[in-house]
Image (cartoon, rainbow, N blue to C red; front, side):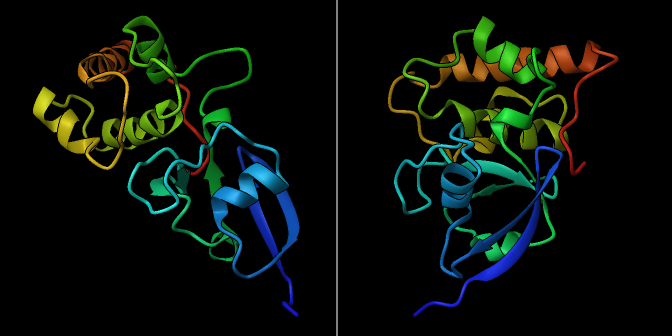
Length: 168
């Protein structure tokens, strides 16, 4: 019999207290307990990056983090990247530059792009490709994803009011 652990996690600005099994992955906690299904489960081996979220402002693959490890943390998912009814400049870039096809990898790509642009607001094409190496897209060929990140970098550098997720 597994003893559940009590955790408190702030997700997208809202505090949640839950009882979880110690082996519950953060991705499953977000999807199954909090019903935040924008974070995708792709490979279950941390290879694809579809499950990337921000934990205390840093991009992590949520299939490699236990929910109990996030106790006390601030987590931002794709649902919390921008205020309700608006898009973050990265989301706008993906929309405008067709940085998605099936959309399965898109939440993880966007969250990884957020981390990249936070650390390097004006990346070169090579830096973008290197920054997204841990995220796999099986549809696009990546060129439009690179264009989307370049567009987002430009939007963010010219925008005075870029929405910033919790944890930054």
